[in-house]
Image 1 (cartoon, rainbow, N blue to C red):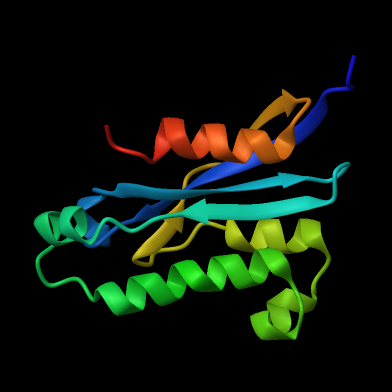
Image 2: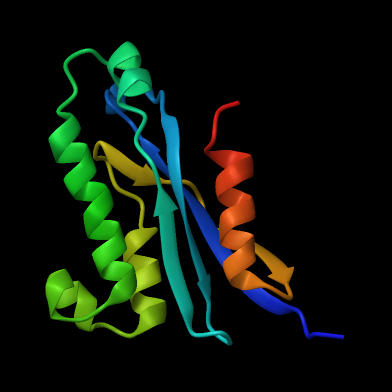
Length: 129
């Protein structure tokens, strides 16, 4: 039997008008210290975003989401944040902010398959059926 690993995750949200506190879930970011795992999975349904906020800058939102991906991967492509240790990058990504792209509070769980959990969380929390 495989050992369960502690993981943390947050939902990535598009918040077009911060003052209204309305949002669309567009992705998840998952971190596991033991597995040395930090990844994000996202998709931007532009029709949904435009229906929610007709004047949103889709290109800007997509760039913010791609920056989440670069920061998860780490390295020089992610700028100074990409050089931080994995745990610090996760904490930076999930810090409270008042921007168009935000994250939920951090949640925890246990899983034998943390990469698989990324896909399950994405399916449960982001995809619209």
